Image 1 (cartoon, one colour):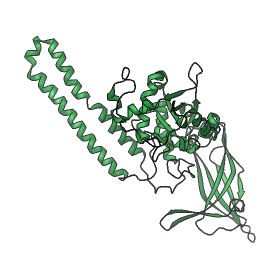
Image 2: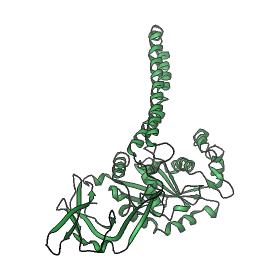
Image 3: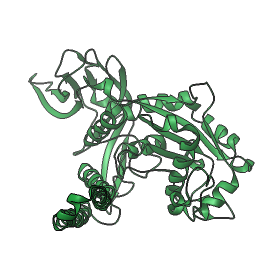
Image 4: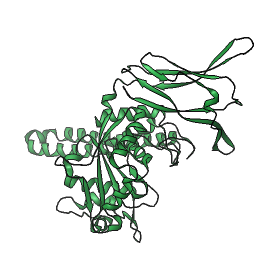
Amino acid sequence: MLNQEVTLDIEVEELETLSSDATEILFESSNSDLLITPTNIPLSTLIAGGKQSKNLGGTATRDYYLANNQVKVKCNRAFTVNEQIKIFAKLKDPVSGLEDKKEVGKMMVMKNSDQPKYTINVYVIKAFISDNPSFGEAVIDTEFAKIGGLAGLEKYLNENSLNQGLIQVKLIDKDASGNVLKMPLSTNTFETANLGKSPNPSMISDSKYTDIKDIITTRSTFEVSSGKSVNLFNLQFNLVNGNIAKQKCILLYLCPLKTPTAGGSSYNNPLTNNHCIIFKSNIGHLPSYAHEIAHTLGLEHTFKEGQTVQQKITDVQNKLTEYRRKQNVERTKKTTHLSANQAYYSTHPTEKSEAIKALDENIKSYNEIIKYYEDELNILKKNPYKFEDQKTENTMDYDLQNQKTFFKWQWRVIEDETKKYYH
């Protein structure tokens, strides 16, 4: 980030046996305004903590050394191109005095001249059961305090996670009048939605709640479906805070309920979706917030789920082709109908207008499903790489104790989505 200093750990991967000799690790910046301090560290310092090993699946392992808080990096001006810090290992022969210097790594620094376009307003809303203290507001407050509340969360997102892709968020927990953002929902609201009916029929029709039917998955413990909860919260929040929901923002719900498997929930399709939930089990887990917000910004999990990416792409392309074919059939029907009835419509303009309206509706009926699969195809192509579950340190992996980083290609995805939909 521009004019912000970041402190980084150094991880040394062991490809051949390392020893605590006189080898120095050097850091050389490609730009005088890209500063790194110190510029050299003894290898012995970086490996002093001892060797660690990570299982990569099967019998494959990776040996490495981790040294915390070793270097500070700062950008003194905005970069219009990507920059880098090359890392060298240098060893001087004590007898001949000759130096052996080899490049052993790089730090990539992405251009940050567009950083002001990567800011997002995130409204933090407490969504709870108003008539059941076991799932009430106090539960949220207790869990949220464990991570330092709003200030602790904003610091984490802006300094330890989303900032890797230059994203900066502003967390907002009050409306324009200064009232804390809350969405108290009664037990009856869930029970009615569980039947696929509207809790507010005079304001929203039952048809909007059809897909929310059976939201309660386990009645004895009041567990709920994570995805259907996103849909319910979306509808209910729009009723009372539609002015906020229509903004270019992300709506982050803190919810004291439980789900069978998920600690959070959000959709990356449609790309305009801006709702995500953190459930009770994960309110006190900082990486879960970055994980769900990143879903909203177009990232998928880093591990394989069902088909391969290419299989999914092929499946979506086939569906797109079929729906576009059906839409073209409707266009042909319109042309044929108007041509066949040209004489009649020449003297009956009202009937012609009504016919065109009906025919156009048939054509438009495919727009939403086509847009959905176009977005799905876009998302799949932007998330091409998959790894074994819980074998990486990526925020989009499921190792909850080790969600630390985003890959470089993920930076570009969340930057593009932020600039397009949220800024």
